[in-house]
Amino acid sequence: MRKLALLALVGLFFISCKQGEPRYTQSSAEIDTFKELIAAYEGADWENYTAKFADTAQVYHNTDDKPMTPAETVEAHKTNTAALSSYGFVPDKGDMEMVTTDEGETWVNYWGLWKGTIASNGKEMMTPVHVTAQFVDGKVVKEYGYWDNAPMVAAMEEAAAAEAPDEVKPADEVNPGGAE
Image: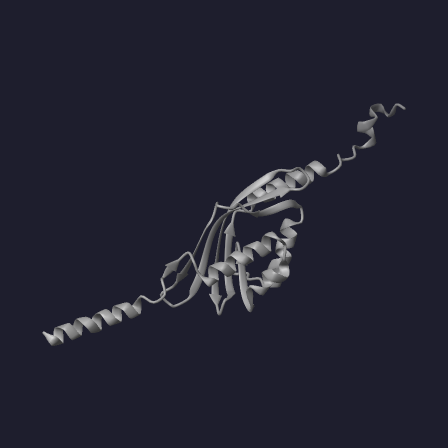
């Protein structure tokens, strides 16, 4: 009986040791860092934004084979938001979790709704976004982001076309028959 009790105690000890860190959580230092990363993006605070990444970080936005550095990502964000009067993520329309994989990797997953307003015409665009970022020692080492750019590209082209001056018509169309 003593051996059975001792065996049960040892079993409980091993089970309790395995339950240290939760596999999934919605509260962690990495999630807090990711929230700061989003806030830096929304505020165009690019110095703070890049500070959240490791020096060797690879960023994959809508690609799986063409990584950017954090500095290149900032330049892409600047280009993509230049024609917008405002942009950011809709509060309370997102969710975030941290997961520890079977390999012991730490990833933060974010699902959100991005909203931007085109400066020239005031048109608002809403785009569902998914971003997942791998953390090592408190820094993002790898990030994947996925969203559908097509509606925004079409809206930007439409806005640019509306701003373009009418094409100059040939003289014979302006003044048919050449009469003065």
